[in-house]
Every structure is written in structure tokens, then in C-alpha cells.
Length: 338
Image 1 (cartoon, rainbow, N blue to C red):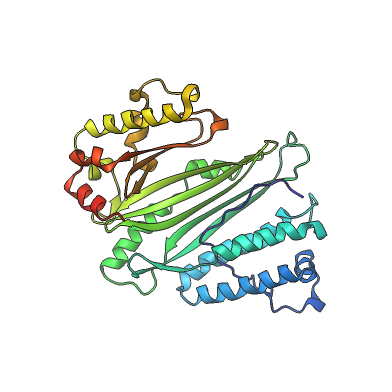
Image 2: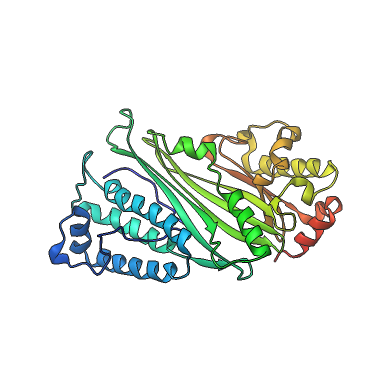
């Protein structure tokens, strides 16, 4: 079985490829290894049926272009998961030991098969995905494949009109670009990754795209979790900037000083930065922010402020310490946090 971390898929859709049947296929006619595997295990058969039903419920909410996008992604997944659970380098070889892998993939998929109505009920949010399965580097002893999955959200434009079309179009354009790091990761033969992004409303005028990543260097002792965020200013129809929330420059010092004190308390000698000024560029970027009712959480990635083994770090600065530096927009949005 291929070594791999726990998969986290969000906002993906099930769509059977033409000619393939979901849970309704006749097991007496099963010929492909993946069909036989599904039929061999009652729990896996149940998951297959549940997944098909969940897809049908979501599909009814989508317009034509959205359906087409998820169909392309799903066809990729349908060919990807059997090989991800395979014990053979060529073709698909699924023995009884593949049942646990298949169950895991189906369970995560079932969580992901959701078409949601969000943003005050004005928009339908669905997910598309990219999958990659590469022959692992020879240095990864005993591992067949490097597996990569990237799931990301979009807003269905079907049925929208007026200002909603403009807003949804700009949000989709903001969500669409594939980060260079993701493109490179999908080609990596020395790791296994799962990256998923969820779109959510943070405040009345701020949308957040929250990304969760699980990274497993083949041959490492355990996977590493990571997260990130990006924000969209609904009022101005563009990505959120630090200047939208804060005025002047003193807020940077307050954030950096507060973060350094908390990091020192948590890491002691393991801290990789020496002074607050070393944190200035990190705390200024909205991508490191998480808006919470009690304060602004600052998230630092692996290796930024602590050794790799320590993992990501965070610090939360109370809004009371920052209120004097908030813009009118910032005050109104912070006041709405619950």
C-alpha cells in the first residue's frame, strides 16, 4: 500500500464518468478491480451509494458550466483513487488490504460532496479539483507513488444578475490563479500532499479563502500540517490590503512586539528570530492573519520562526491593543466579529 498522510478534501463533487455506474451498478457484472473491491465490502458499498446520492443532491443546484468543471475534476479523481490505493506500479492491483484505503478516500469524498449556499444565501459555492499521481523518487524506499490533490472553491454564476454577477465574477477571478507553489508541488516526486481551500464570510465586507495543507515528505516519520488565508474586500471588489484595516505604521510594531513575546514564551531557545523587527514583514501580510473576536491571530508557517520539527506557530494580539490604529472600515468589520 502506498504510504500517505490523512487526506483532507473540501468542496469536491462526485460525478460518475460516462459509462460508469455508481452504487446502482450490478455487482454481478463488475469487471474492473475498483468495482470488484467496492462490491467485496459492505461498508465500501454503502459509502459508494451514499456518495452517489450526495452528488445527485448537489448537482441539481449547479448550472451548466459548473457541472462541466466538476465533471472534469471528477473524471480525474475516478482514475486517481484506484491507483492511489493500488499495490502495483503499473495498472490497478487492489487486494483486500486496499479496502481501508478505499474507505478512507470515500469517507473524505463524502464529506467533500457539498454544494453550499453562502454569503447571505446569495451565491452557490461548489468545488473543483486537480489530482496528480507520480512514480515516487527512487530514494523513497518502499513507496510507489507521490500523490497530490488540490481542491478549490468557485461561485456558480448561473442565475445571477446585476451587482451579484460582478461580485461573483471578481471573487472567482481572485480564487482562480494557481499559486506557483501548488503547480510545483503537483510535480513533486518526493512528497505526498493534500491542499484544500474553503470560501467563507468573515465579516459583512470581508470574504476569506482558507487553505489547509497536509505535507508528507516520503520517508519522513510523520506528515506536517499547514494553513493559510487570503481575504477579499467586498466593498471595494478587490483583495483586502493591510491599509484597508490599519492606518499609519505603528500597528506593525504592536503586532510584532506582541507576537515576539508570545513566541518566546512558547519556544524559548527554539525561536529562530532574534528581534521584533524580524517579524515586521510577516505580520504585515494579510495572508498571515486570522480574524477572531478576541483579537488578530498571526500564523507563521513551517521554518519561519521555529525549526521544521516544531511545526507552524501562532500568536494572537487583542483588538484592544490595536483599536487606535484601525481605519473606519477596520473598526466596523472588527465590531461585527462574533
